[in-house]
Length: 185
Ligand SMILES: Cc1cc2nc3c(=O)[nH]c(=O)nc-3n(C[C@H](O)[C@H](O)[C@H](O)COP(=O)(O)O)c2cc1C
Figure 1 (cartoon, rainbow, N blue to C red):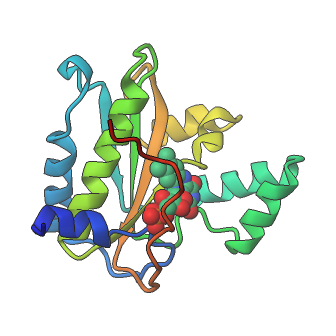
Figure 2: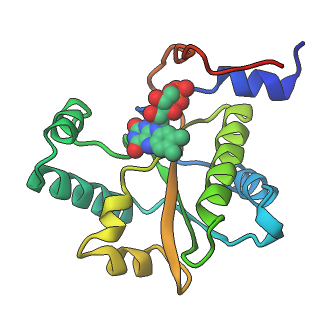
């Protein structure tokens, strides 16, 4: 079976390299609509989406993630960071920072579902994307409150997920499907 939704689902990849071309206003509005259309537990919509195209702000978060990892004792994380050239957002011209109500037990799940709506919508309009969770450490560290203010998180919100977006300048194979992931009864 084939249709446009299934095509976007099967052709989406995590993009880890972007052109500097900024997103258009129309693209950003389209992605905002896709985010807002997401389902949420009890329709609480306990999320907030900061569409950030400010490279200074994006770089500040990225550098803090690098600093925390390189100052820490997780050698795997250090290797991964070095292997990715210390990039967290891969030069994406726009990053959506999704924050959510820290009191709600469903809000991280809601944010994850909204992130998927954003990446599939991005795929459908010819943009690349990657969901980024690792920058969470920057919001939990000593500069966390500064970043929350800078990125306009509402009061009482925590970081949930980020989505880096832009025109891809890399390509990637589909991920291999793991074994024993389904049962049919
Ligand atoms: C919750 C979540 C967090 C993720 N965090 C990161 C991240 O911090 N950095 C990154 O490069 N990719 C991140 N990814 C992307 C995954 O690595 C990617 O989805 C996976 O390797 C499968 O590849 P694909 O998306 O191309 O199918 C994240 C994905 C999810 C769903």
